[in-house]
Amino acid sequence: MSLRQHLEALTPEMTAWRRDFHAHPELGYEEHRTSAIVAEKLREWGIEVHTGLGGTGVVGVLRGKRGGNRAIGLRADMDALPMTEATGLPHASTTPGRMHACGHDGHTSMLLGAAKYLAETRDFSGTVHLIFQPAEESLAGAKAMIDDGLFERFPCDAVYGLHNEPGLPLGKVSVHAGTMLAAIDYFSVTVRGKATHGARPHLGVDAVVAASQVVGALQTVVSRNIDPLETAVISIGQIHGGTSDIVIPDAVELRGSVRTLKPEIRDAMEPAFRRVVENTVAAFGATADIEYRRAYPPTINTPLETERAALAAATLLGQDAVLPDEPPITAGEDFAFMLEKCPGAYVMFGQNGGDKGGTPVHNIHYDFNDDLLPLGAGYLAQLVEQELK
Image (cartoon, rainbow, N blue to C red; front, side, top):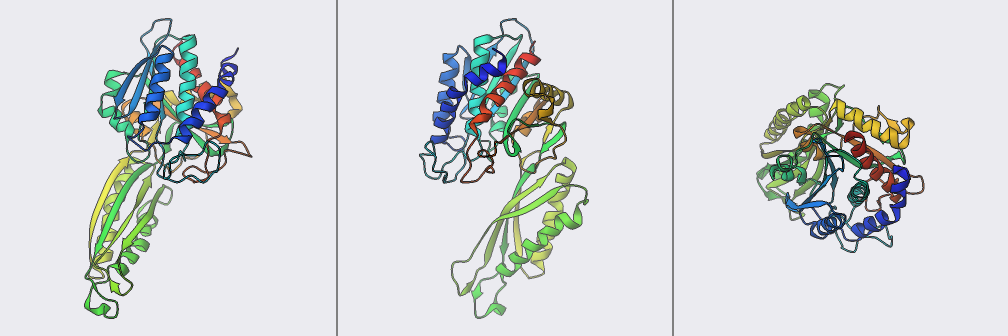
């Protein structure tokens, strides 16, 4: 059988794994059941297993039958999101408030499928490190694994990751050198005024009005401080303030995110953000406490490894399947931390099959398209056999 046929034969098994993970989602750093299953299967297939990296991370070490000193890493994320699923599927989440709404159940299953195939064939020279990562969703599990010595203990000449993309047709792969995904930074702004009776606003300092003006003014950080040909996004995700309909509160909190594609644009955003917030609230006699936290850097593919990733995808799926000109996405990914330490590439696999797989990620109606399992697993296995000839 060809590689693709071999992985297609594994599809029923991968589907069973995927749906089991989907029914039992776990949040970041809580993936105890998931990581235990991953470790158990890797051991069953004769793969050397290391657990506890970054808390609940697992690394499988598999050596080819041809010797060799070169090593590559393949990474899949395992965590779910704090959402309540509304798909009504037979394999829907059994835990209220927990849901695999981003397809990490599928990513884990694809890497397991590739691992099983590679363990059976071992038709490569060198070592593959199978990296099952916790806490991708805003909790920087990749960084936690790195801080735990991931690349010192398991040196890689290159590292590769993938993600499903409902916005692309099934069987298409987006990959290009440079920035694939944005940097993400988070902020909290507490606007402080002076509480007063709602009937006597002149006796206080209205934090609600000041905070409302900040929401609008922050949009000028991008429109009037950043080159129009560059990309930056500021989004307010939360507003909290007040406890009564007849009291003007003394504080209102704004929380949100900032997304940029280039390091220099990222560096320009924070001082502009602070200046706009501080001067806006000052105009109303209020003050502001600002917390601005840099979270994930941009996900930047290195050129040579991007070529290799594209070659593996084309070998498996055909040259027409590879899309080298798709624009970057302003979502973020902590795989970026791995790419800061090691050359590599991150690719997006289309999963929209028309009648399934088209619901956007982070949606209560989302489900991973199981038809993608043999394609993603085949790509990962192809990378190993290609890069560790």
